[in-house]
Length: 108
Length: 121
Image (cartoon, rainbow over the protein chains, first blue to last red):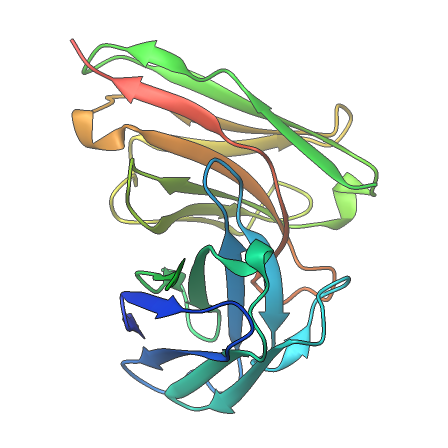
């Protein structure tokens, strides 16, 4: 079973600054990794798939990188609407599908 | 546009049963694998189950719900279901239905708004 670990648990960032979120897999997942954004009271929204491909309608300030066991989600210049919880998910080997524990991006 | 709308959530006693439904619209439902994911209060996302586009094969469950929950679908009604039996307090969560990606890889490109299930005496 693949375990996904996200860090940090909470990231305090000022608007306009860059945010870098990490996701680590317990074994290689190739590039079969997705990132989701979840705001309070809302369903998750797909941001990134295949480690670096942006989903439809996702702004270019969101970018994903990595392969194997180490992945990064970067938000180049945080906007007010970007403060949320972000989850990574591997889909290389399952069941079970595995999500990371999430990183909360909060206003500094 | 793609819409997924869950219903059937509510309060149930431990050991009880509940059936969630997910009504799909705005896409060809019968072409997509579907899944259920839940989120306990204040916690992260927890994948529960997958079902193939036809519903006749390719059924997978997380160990935490295997033998208690059953996923099914009715492509004539564009609907996905989750029958939940022998419910426990730890099953309290918001339950989301989610569409498997259009390219067939097992990430989720659309999610419903969720249905709250509370298991309490």
